[in-house]
Image (cartoon, rainbow over all chains, first blue to last red; front, side):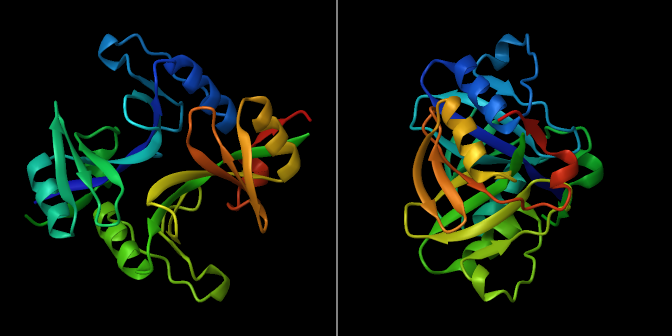
Length: 127
Length: 127
């Protein structure tokens, strides 16, 4: 058995002006940018959504701009296999997550648990 | 004065197999597909997320598959002008909504109020 659920949406912005990109999306959506001093998160800015809701991040990327979603899980390999069984395919493993492609064509990521209420509210799947 | 906020995310799927696309995303995210008998919504399937959270829909589209977000507003023209002031540009008006492009490159839509608690929880902007 393992767990997973939708973690959130990532607004991928091509180019180096991350703070400017985060400012646009913060003002467009009316959601503040959370302060961050974690150097490991230099390519991300997180919007300050309620903790029990899906998270929204602005990310600096090298590929063309898009929006993608993250699925959070407590067992990366089991979740990737479950999604392969539904028709998704592996694209690349990056540090602690997998990039996958849906049978409908969108890329998305499978990541470690992100939100505090993951254990309590995520879906449970048989392995 | 007018109001707006993030309404939700739309998973745009190229091609005609909408129910199959909705089934993949429903099973991948562990969120049921809401039943719909509204013929005006033949190109959408809505996932059954909590009513106070952002909505998630699967849409059949002709352009390449992607994910886009919707901003809901009680004054379409005022909100489009506000977003233009932030650097977004108008792409096309379709029935009751505007397709816009962010300065960071993603397309998104500005739509009429979607969620029941819009009036109570949306952001208020000066015109």
